[in-house]
Image (cartoon, rainbow, N blue to C red; front, side, top):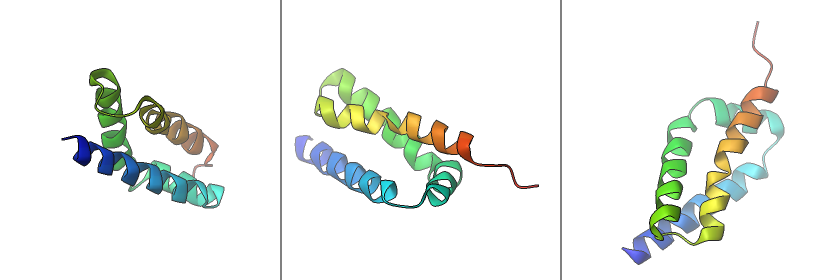
Length: 81
């Protein structure tokens, strides 16, 4: 279980780092469309992992920050007329 959660943690954090390198408009699109289910899953798993001690606190907090990432990117995006 520990190695599986460690692999999951590293995978999610690596993807987050890659997304943060993208232009703001691409980040907004990712936050609003295809990544929403994956972000929701990662957020839930991080909350649970933090609560039951299966994830390192620092990593769990970084993953939980996805909530802020999604809300900021979605709010910044202008609606298409």
